[in-house]
Structure formats: structure tokens, C-alpha cells
Amino acid sequence: MSSDVMARAGLVKTRIQQGALLVVGLVLAAVMIGLGLWQMQVFENQGQSGAVARMEQPPVPLTDVARAGQQITDGYGRTVEFTGTYVPAEQLLIPVDGKPGTFRVLTPLKTDDGTLVPVVRGESAGTTPPAPPAGEVAQRGVLLASDKQVSRPLPSGQIGSVYLPVLVQRWLDPMIAGYVTLPADQAAAQGLQPATPHLPSGRGSVQNFGYALQWWVFAACALGFAIYLATYIGRAADRRRLAELGLITHDEIGPDPDRMS
Image (cartoon, rainbow, N blue to C red; front, side, top):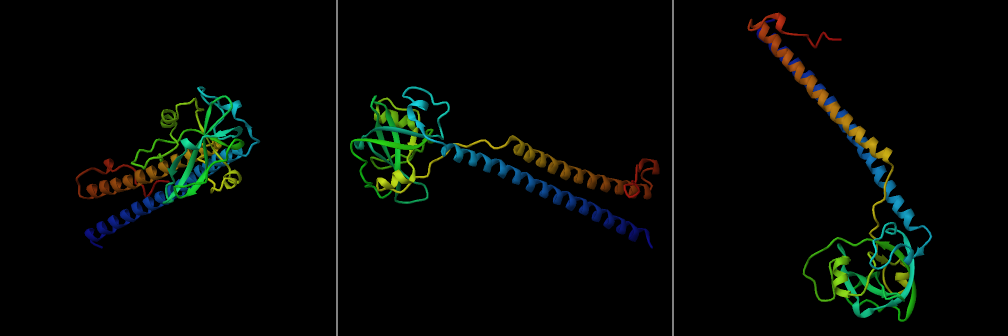
């Protein structure tokens, strides 16, 4: 067999070895990334389940967790109960993303001490929702933090989100640092469709989060090691060819990866 044929055969063998190493590294990395994503999904699901469980706890009086002019520390995501009188003249509509022509109906409720509670009573298919109940009513719903600000041109009587700094400027009266979304039964009692509450993110198990990071580190290491080995094999083959051409001595070739245990 001529030296050229042997050189080509050696080059093909080296490229096959390199390709096989890279394929193995990519497969291992993909599997580990998938395991990390699975652990992260478990982490997020646990957080969501925790938020739902918090919402489903027995209701507490609103005044126990939220008062006008005070910061809410442990009330968001909890179901609260309160009484007061709706102020329909200050009602606002909020377009629902992904539902053209549908609006969240935001109506302030004034409690006995004059505090305003922003209440999302439900959703309305149109700009003329049913009026809120007259007189003093007892209400129950999940307490939520301010939405993010949404700035876009809207008709009079509409706002982009339940952004509390804007509401404070519009309504002027003392107001709690949050808003309440009514449950399905109370929304239906007022002739509205239920609005989906934007629950605060719960916390999943730190262990699952750690497992996700661990798998991703393993994936990076597996891929990096495969690239290192493939590069090492290629360089070793190049040194053998240079030695065969007499450009370097055999002592400079280094260990032969084909013979390494």
C-alpha cells in the first residue's frame, strides 16, 4: 500500500474518531440539557402549585394584610374578604390581551373608613358591562400586586392595566397597595365572566433548581470534553504525519491516543 493511500486512510480514521466523539458529546449534552429542563419544569410547577394553594387557603380580612398608605408584606396571592360600596362612576375597562372586544371590569369599592379597594369584578364582552351591586356588599377575592404599566392609546374610560400609580392619580382617595380579583361565582353573580387572576410566582424546591443547574453544568462539561478529545486526536494525527515527513522527530509526537488505555 502506498504512503499516500495510508495517509488518506489515517486521515479518514482520524476524522471518523473525531466525528464519533463529537456526536457522543452532543448526544450526552442534549440528554443532560433535557434532564435539566425537566427539573426546571418541576421547579416551576411546584411554584405554581404553591401559588394556587396559597390562594385556596381560608380567606382573611383584607384589613389584616392591607391598609391604605401601608406596604403589603405578606398578603399578595391570598384570598381576602371585605365589605363596602362600589363607586360605579369611577369604573374603568382594561382590554384583555388575546381577546379582542373583551375587557376586565375594574371598579373601586369604598370601605367604611373611606379606603378604596380596586376590584376586578370580572370580564365583559363589550364596553357596557353590567353595573355593580348597589349599596354595601360583602366581597371575596384574591389580593394581587400592581400590574406592569401598559402605555398605548385607548378611548376614554379605558386603561392598559391595573397599574396602581395611575389609579392613585385618577381616584385620589386613600387606596390599598394592591387590587382584588373576584372569583368565578361572584363574577357570575354580577353578570360577568370570571377574570383570570395574575397570581404571584411561588417558590419551588431549591433542590430541583439545584438539580437543573447541575445537569446543565454536566452537559457543558460533556460537550467540552468531547471537543477537547476530538481536537487532541486531530493534533496527534497531524504530529504523526509531520514525523513521517521528517519535519519533527518521533520524540515530539507525544502519546498515541489509539494506544492510550
